[in-house]
Amino acid sequence: MKKRGWLVWCPDEVVSSVSDIHPTWLVQQGVQAVLLDLDNTLVPWQRVDVPESVRQWIGEMKRAGLRLCLVSNTRRRRRLEVLAKRLGIAYVPRAFKPRRYGLRQALQQLKATPEQAVMIGDQMFTDVWGGNRMGMRTILVLPMARREFIGTKVSRLLERILLWAYQRTGALKQGAGTLATILASKK
Image (tube, rainbow, N blue to C red; front, side, top):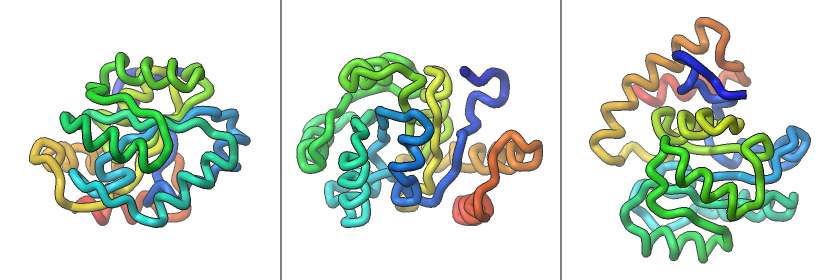
């Protein structure tokens, strides 16, 4: 179900990192395809070194039968290709999230419908909004590093305000104090 009004930026779940997302839980929810942001979701911004915890998590996702695709707004296509190859997953360059085009491409590659997919990323105004526009489940993760694009730094303040408002109104599911951790870390 597509979210409307001020809920278009509201994620279905909020977690500290991708490794907090268990593949069995996704499969139980009917998820078959996982669309993943790259920068500050799987690797620190503009880096190519994939943390071991992320490599292990990707392996767990694959072993659970989930199909994965990197959906990135990065302009550095070669870097995206290298990381996708290292991780053994599909990719969509220049996705222009929150626009639907790149997300549709990813769903086509994974042979999945929006109802069978989840979008996971660290930004509400690109990853979450894009996934919600498509009618997918959305999971917001805590950014891996403080270093990021200047425009993203500005949007973090607005994200923090929205997360607080979503929590306050009950629009956002509260899970094990994770939201409090995220709000505190976004200062």
